[in-house]
Image (tube, rainbow, N blue to C red):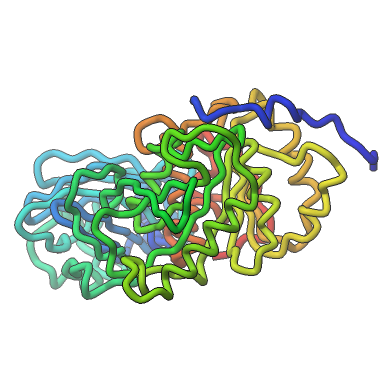
Length: 427
């Protein structure tokens, strides 16, 4: 192996920041006279004023199917606003979800899962009946055909009433959706500063969640000391119940260092233990992720061996010199790369790093053809924001539905606009 490589250094270091729940199966064969039967599990994963998230798992009890559609009727005027791992059509109360291009074939005994966010007013009961490819999902083979979801919950024993966030803190942040903050998550978020952590920007839900917040430490592109350069992206993460600590003051100037990431971790641990702090006992200091874009990714590499770090996220970045490959060899905890495709100036460096990771290290590599600038300044951080939230939910909150986006040959990001590679990943 060559002792040095042609790294793209100057451009990366100078780049600034301008720029569902478990596997579920499907049922019903599309072949005439094939045995058909299914079971559906519908679970509200989080709920807040006016909105909720839900995971749906369909288990195939009959013959294999190739192409599926699941239908049901909402009983209280709920509306789906965003859905993943499928395509949704809604007309009034009637909902129909068809398979995505990558998850239409389901073997007998297999399952498929999808998730969605929705809105509600008044009450949020679970649907009573589900119909897969024209067959009612009764939990048995040979369920009677039904064109619409009916009102009786007795035909869907797995459906359950929506839990309130306070009674289920392990599945949802349990915050109050108040304030003027932003982000698509259940906890509208904003940012603040602290005299105890100078030259940093702190993103948090305006109403602190009941569930302890894991911590995400961020380094900006170009090592820019502007902690609000990627505001939509970082606020989006915080809105899902995370404390985000960005190196650099709001609209700050100058440059950051990797030591500032360590300062962020030190401060969070201290605040969690300090009586009188708003964060006293509210942080999960055993779940800390470090990440950064471009030069900020190099900073994340530098601190990734800190014993407090649970996982590392590298955005459009890669080591600039083979002399720093020791930072790869010392990695022992999961790492994920989110790169801007072959047009990204960091692409070659990132792929070189990928090839040198320790053999047993859990690792994910995703390339989205958006170039080096990413999507950080788009609404809610764009696609990078969406995927970062899923990864952090998986690694820092143990959300295996979110983790399904990254694991397996039919992962949620597989066979999409993302180009995906995986190593040693399990749910």
